[in-house]
Length: 186
Image 1: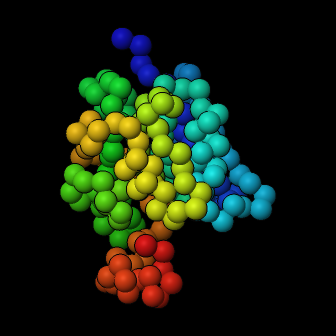
Image 2 (image 1 turned 60 degrees about the horizontal axis):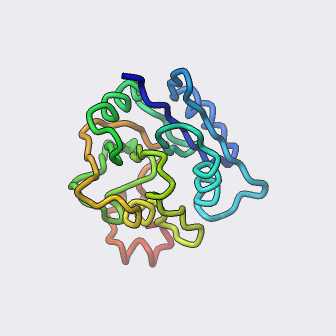
């Protein structure tokens, strides 16, 4: 069986951490890396850049990572195994913050329980929802509104990516409402 290729889509602000992100991507033959930087940055949490990368992607699967995050060693092999075991289905891996906090916690598409870096999805344009440039929680909406039924989602236990920043609301022990009032992205 031919392995499936992956388009790695990276919205970037041009941060120094981009080098670490790029070096964490293990490309196999046929894979591509699409870095999308807008000058000035869109201010929409990278969503316009993700959509542009999605529109340009030529590979069989799409993976998203931000320019301050990194894949764990062996991530590409983990992705390939997941694809071969669940061909044609969307896959959500776990991700880990520097504090050690891991999401997803439960197998449900809920704001705060999903994030961009955990997504590995077939490049099936007719099934995908657009990255919403007006909504901060576009990762949630992208997953919630794609056309695969929720029972088609494969929830994988492997941690696939390490976040480059802590989840501030979690670190401070704030509720959603408290974090919003404090001006923290939730």
